[in-house]
Amino acid sequence: MTVDAAAPPSTWVALRRSPAVLRLTSSVAVSEVGTQVTLLALPLLALLQLGAGAGVVGLLTAAQFLPWVVLALPIGATVDRWSPPRHRQALVASDLVRAVLLAALPVLYATGRLTAPVLLLVVLAIGATSVLAEITSGTVVPEVVERGLLAHVNGSIEAARSLAMVVGPALAGVLVAGFGASKAVLVDAASFVVSAVLLARLPVRNQAARPRSEARLTGLIREGVDVLRRDPVLGRLCLWSTTSNLMGNALTPVVLTLVVREAGMPPGLLGATLAVAAVGGVAGALASGPLALRVGHGGFVAGSALVLAVGILGVGAIGLVAPPHGLVLAAWLAVAYAVTLAANVAGNAQVATIRQHLVRQGQLARVIAAWRTLGYAGIPVGAALGGALGDAVGLRPVVVCSAVAFALTCLIPLTNPIRRLRLGTT
Image (cartoon, rainbow, N blue to C red; front, side, top):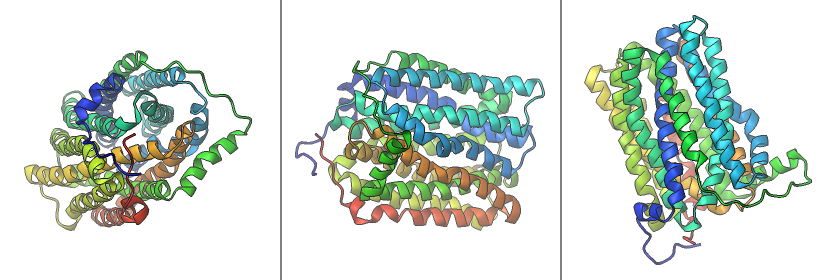
């Protein structure tokens, strides 16, 4: 298909035409602020308060995403059978469960019962709940948004996540420095409560639940996997997701350990650095919808992959020299991560749009589940492998090799089925 000749509306005009998305986007923004606090606070809790090393930091990342490998496929098959009101109920319940789990962490630490294994178990439980929430959320978007606005809406949701990355890390640095990492996660617990309140009033169509299929659960799951196997665009994009997640998460815990342990970057400066870098993600997300409609969604994703490769090589270059300190190190990381996040967030927004266009109604939850199972499988493997190698052979070699391998994965979206794809606006 080709893009309609009429000029596409701006992102803000598009959002005003879809008021339900304002509530959904607000929910994402609020909860993501808390999540960004936790993403920084949990590794610092392990490193600074529990005395753990890079291996445990890698396992924390693995524990967040391992439930996707185990639970996503059956959950996706189940969510596809639910009606929109049931989807809303699942989102609210997931937020409240995660709030309770996070609130338990400072209590466990204060009573001396929080150890590295207990922390990993809590993170596993949060990750399991997040599987249901994220699959359901991906299904809700095309239920409340008209098809021609999906590119804009996905961009706005990713912008909300990126804006949270501006506020969250800086807030995390202040909270960890002032109150300790164990108490900082209470902000995330509160954000999930606010998100639940917003989602409880999300306007959804009151259509009936889809008829239960006579097929076995394994058969329903196979349908979602088959969509990825047969579609050359979706299959390649899923492969890119898997390989880039593997390499990116081998890199992340090792970079964090390098800048905290060897370079001595304080939590406040680290949080501020990541917040500045996240501005790139906001810009990339807001620009992604209009640009993708003008140049074609496939070409836009291919271009974002090239920029992503440049940014991640900039991050990896820190392993080639003795790490600088203070503001020099902060500036290096801010620029490299700003480029990385701008490309990554923009590309992710329009990959979601491509998926919503190419997958037929009633299959989207299963396709998302299969996609995330395969794509996220690389996250726990990469995180655990990167952390273990960092402890065994040194941090700098792992940083450089992981960054180069990540950049090589960005060649996948340059293939013709993706690069030449154009979606219609109707």
